[in-house]
Image (cartoon, rainbow, N blue to C red; front, side, top):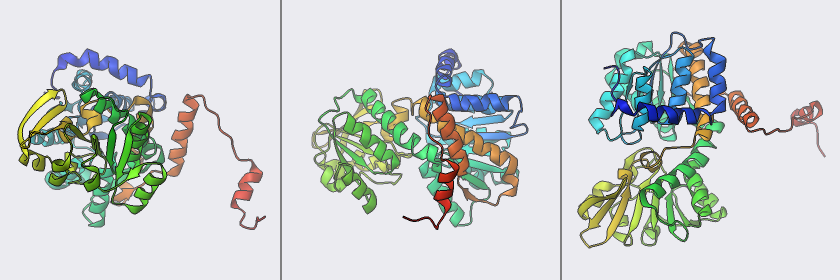
Length: 417
């Protein structure tokens, strides 16, 4: 088969969801119309490894409309929406993804997505990029460049580039202002709480809500949790991030201090072993634990299992761990991305900007990638402004423009009081 999904019969429901997302993603849809006739990606073969959501499907359709050949896999074992994967498969996309795959299946699907021998890659977490370098280095000579969607992947790729191991240019889409300051903040904030509520149904108001990490994602979760009436507690390793959280009105403490008083815990750090054995031992009866960082290693579930007598699924995406001391801890989405495994991921409106950045970054690499040296590149600030202006236009919002005199004043070092 040229695809592998859970159930192709789910395609019609997935198609309707994709059409809903298209109605909420006007920037990406305008790029589709602009480049459909030009076939701007003619000759490009793009292997993608990205959460299979309705928003991703809009990007996939847009790349195809612009002339690209695609091979696709999911970037997280629990984040694929099976009806969306079925819809893409039914439309002829070689897609290899289903919810609940194991680790071996996850990497086999990446291998399948690489079967088109890509000229470009699109990644979320860098697993596909690492697979090319480690297991398919015969493909490297044909790759002009790639993009990386998320903070964790960008950190890994910068470390790879620093070590001299990166073999082709990568554009860090995550670092575009119209990505990290919107997708990471407003998208993660809303979708993470959505996942928690779908998995638990608890009342958030009045809960002690512990957030590990006050970067863009953690800050977004904190904003939404505070708005729902939670008593927000932040744990951090960065003194400046901790100070920012404090001045934003959050309580700041160590995880050791937060563990005995938290009702709900969520990690947003990109670091392993954020919640470990001693923290689980200190948690109160009924504590809820989840993660919205890229990998499930932020919660040390091996440590938790050592303390556990039995585990049962209490409701979808909610496992009850009964500890040997009789207390219960509830782990959501098996410690994986709660906003994607237990909900639908970020809203379409915010992914509109992120995926417009992906489209334009891939287009740049298609045209110029073979002339760029291996390394991690940032988005052109002009592209950021272009996407922001397009988004404002679709929202019916007008802004001011500097006059020639103001432009002169801004750049004239001789001007003073």
